[in-house]
Image (cartoon, rainbow, N blue to C red):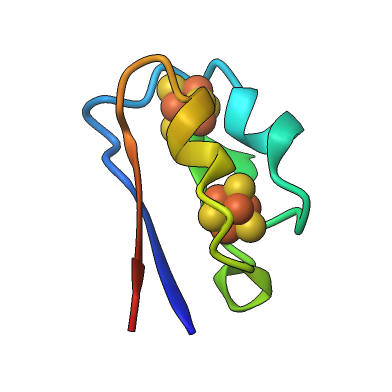
Length: 61
Ligand code: SF4
Ligand code: SF4
């Protein structure tokens, strides 16, 4: 299992994570990325790599 977090203060709604995530974990909610389908995460950390503001963190739980 993976815990995916988006720091809402850092997120600028650029959607790179939404476009890049192979498991479609994220949706844009009120202009911010929200990991609403976190249970689908495969832990690839692509979202961490593509986010320009370092808002995404992924940790194994
Ligand atoms: S680690 Fe990979 S699968 Fe998980 S939310 Fe990020 S991009 Fe999607
Ligand atoms: S890539 Fe980063 S800044 Fe852009 S929507 Fe995702 S979390 Fe927000």
